[in-house]
Image (tube, rainbow, N blue to C red; front, side):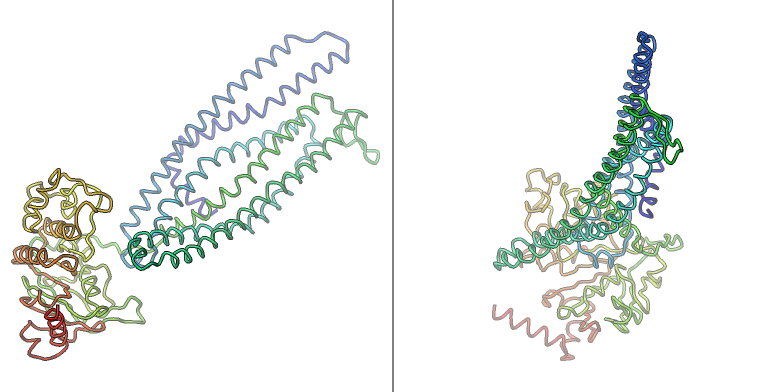
Length: 595
């Protein structure tokens, strides 16, 4: 119910259309419910005229026919308008939910995304929203219509035969308790089913992204076995949840049928024998054929909602599980909002950076970095080297504020980066990642992604600095060539050059290259180095590189190991120390000589 209340906060902006939909739903339900009553009046009138031996009252019959035609028209028009308006409300609400989820994702810290399986997140954003949308679209009018049918049927039954209406009412608490029992049994199973589907999507996304690697190492059988485990879990949970929920409909129908048989017998006795007398007390007046006929129809009408609730049980339980998962995402803790600091003129930032005794760990009780203390002057080129897992990328992540330090501070030109909003601090950087990311649009727009306000000429200038302009000119539509979804119509090295152009188009004060040349050949690496040497003039730059021969000219080299900076200095100074840097450099130099 808590999730349902939150869901309706997305419906409230469209409450006028929703209210109109409910009005027309009430209109057609009332019209439909009144028809047995009207037909019953006609039969009662005919029964009376035949019993009295008089002619049929044709004027009365004409009135009855007009009423039936009118109610049929209201039934058809009301149902059409109710469905039309509700479809508009549901789709508008789902649009708002998707927009809210997208906005939420942009406010979540990188640590949250890192801690979640991509496939599971994708399921929450797409599949879970669709499940809720389908439940609302298919079930809302049916449930509301069924509820109103139930109410109107009971009202008309009380008008025609109060005693028998009271007996008919006993069916509802009986069915309610049975329904609640099965819902409590099956709902946890539906929750597990949706979570298992999220795991399956995560598994599929992960493994088929690396499909070539699976083929390369012949791991198809191993992947199939892991898939079988998840699929078996879905099969078992799906069977238990759907079977448990499917029991509701036949059990409720059986209970309802028992009540109806008893009720028909009692009413039949009053038709044949007159008033129903128990212990000398008349508990029910005799009913005629018209009342019996209308009562039978109302009983069947009131049984419809019970069956509808039972049939929609699976749909609504799956939707309830999806709602829970959606709101778990929407309730995730966001990055601390910090307003832009208008007292700082970002255009005057020079790029002096200081790591002041910082400490950091992904959990507070397990620090990976302790007492990192480094000063970087404006315009310096800083290389960060060390073995895998030494903390090189983590140091850059802290600088970019993908994570915040646990202790100490990072300052840019004396300003603590925490004084700036993350948007402000990140606007100072241009970053090229090890794995180039491009999206499904033109080359021009892929480069412009680094600065959406850049003109076409600025994009072209950035491409020239990245030494990729000539290549782009050879593409079929030059800068308007659309990269496909996997960007497979350009090579890995060319992708990297395009991302470098993207980093430069924003004219950043600080440039970061996270192993940017690791995916390219030696010729392209030289092109990149020349381009970056020109682009980094007057800018502070950080380079993470495995090839130590490429960072000989760096102003400052930070040697990291196990989260600590064990050495720092320029190339000659570090070689003279004879420490870890010299060991790494000599080992790599020997490998290159052997190659």
